[in-house]
Length: 293
Image (tube, rainbow, N blue to C red; front, side):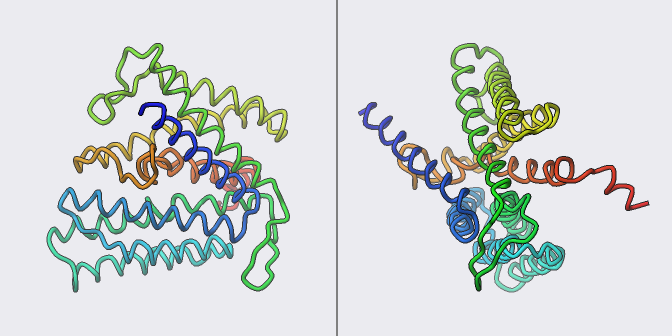
């Protein structure tokens, strides 16, 4: 039975990993479809978790907003982002006003949190994939990404998070003595967090310098950001589940739990890495600041 569970977990993990790998390489529509599948299923799990707490966020508004965010990222129309956030927030209020039920404030707030946490944050992967590509090529609605620079960064992020999670687990099992966040996630330890961080930093230094030709300090910072926010994302999802009295977000993935359980380490990491690359690696942040004064 234990072997069967381990084999199921391994097969499902490899299947998800290879699917993400090839979607990132292809970019464009395949990656967008994969992101939307994850967003739709993750949002469904999110609303179910919140219902255990007595809240009823609007799944429909979360999905509609996330679809618009995906189109903005796909067509690189970030100028429409303020309008989209404004309209989506209005919709959350109006849904509660005309169709919602108590508690009103919590239902509005959790709906807005839903399309940010489950939608906009992970959809930054589409923006990350387009880094280094000045003008994506469109054939009708089909987009191709002629540059693989963004794919390389996204794959570095993908493998770095996997390595961080794995090394946190094994370092914690071997050396863990001091609890990292005992109330939120009792099994996580400070020693495990340090082990995962060191492994991630070393991985980013090696591949950042040798493969991506990144400056050593950019590689170091990338490793620290990925390791830090992967663990923060994991803890934040655990915090939501703990508050709602839920162990797993769902059981949709055999041996792994739900989509939120498998992607929680990426939810914060993807936007953080994207903005670091965009403002500090691809562009000079100090020059951008000078333009403000």
